[in-house]
Every structure is written in C-alpha cells, then in structure tokens.
Image 1 (cartoon, rainbow, N blue to C red):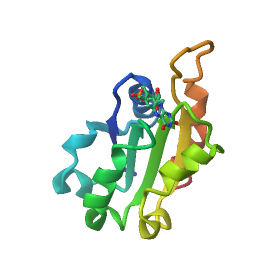
Image 2: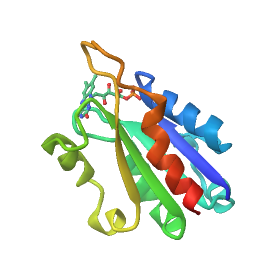
Image 3: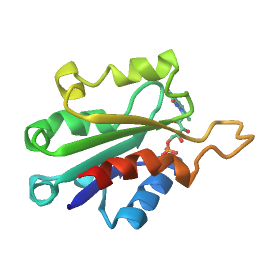
Amino acid sequence: MNTNIYYKSIFGSTKKYANWLQITTGANLFKLNKIDTKNIDAADNIILMSGTYAGQMPLIKTLVSNWNNLKDKNVIVIAVGAAAASDKQSEISYELIPAEIRKNIKYFKLPGQTLNQVKNCVKKDNILPIISILEEK
Ligand SMILES: Cc1cc2nc3c(=O)[nH]c(=O)nc-3n(C[C@H](O)[C@H](O)[C@H](O)COP(=O)(O)O)c2cc1C
C-alpha cells in the first residue's frame, strides 16, 4: 500500500510526527503545498497534517480544494495542537472541515507544543493509532 504524507509545520511538531510516520511506514513525504494530481494518483493512503493556529488548520484548504481527487482514497487527517482532542476548541476547529468530507476521512488530534512548555507532549507513541490504521489495509 502506497502512502503519501502532506504536512505543514511552523514550529516543528507536525514535522516531527510526519518524519516519524515516514520512517515507520516508508511513506512518501511532501510539503502540504506540493500536493498535486500526479502524486495523489499513485497513493492508496493520503495523510494530510498541520498544526492548529487560532483555531485554523492550514490542511483544511488543501483538503477541500483537492477533495475530488482524494475522495476515493483512504484519507487520514491529523491536526496537531496544544488543545486536547476532547476540548471544545478542538471540536470547533474540526467542524471547520465540511460535513460531507468529515464523513469520509479518519481524523486525529495529536498533542503539539505549548507556549510555556513544561513537559514534552510530542512523543513518537502518539502516532501508534495511525500506524494501526495503515496496517489494517
Ligand atoms: C498563535 C498560536 C495559536 C494557536 N492556536 C491553537 C489552537 O487554536 N488550537 C490548538 O490546539 N493549538 C493552538 N496552538 C498550538 C499549536 O497548534 C502548537 O504549537 C503546534 O505544535 C503547532 O504545530 P507546529 O509545531 O507543527 O507548527 C497555537 C499556537 C500559536 C503559536
């Protein structure tokens, strides 16, 4: 199974997760703005990932504008952020993804770095649920 990862990271946490996923699965790694029909076509699994900034996830614009080419793939969306997955704030960000698309993706919120970082929340084990999904296929 071919997997392509497209990521955008400003402060480095999403990049760390993207690199760990790439090393563990042998996926192809691209910057989010490098997505195009040619490299989507050959992939079975597509992972789109970005940090969350003031509620916005840059990956959403890419997801929506490429949805016609992505809709028949196994699409995994990963938001990285300081707010816990269960926070209302994270739910609001998730709901910025159009409902039709939400029904057809697998979504994860992974811990990113916080401003006054006391402990490091960006851990390799956080990607294990995503690895499991890729191994199911
Ligand atoms: C200006 C700013 C706004 C942020 N807003 C959010 C937010 O709305 N929700 C959230 O979960 N995390 C938020 N964060 C935390 C970032 O998502 C976190 O630092 C993450 O690691 C960013 O991804 P990156 O390191 O790949 O750039 C914010 C961080 C900054 C600096």
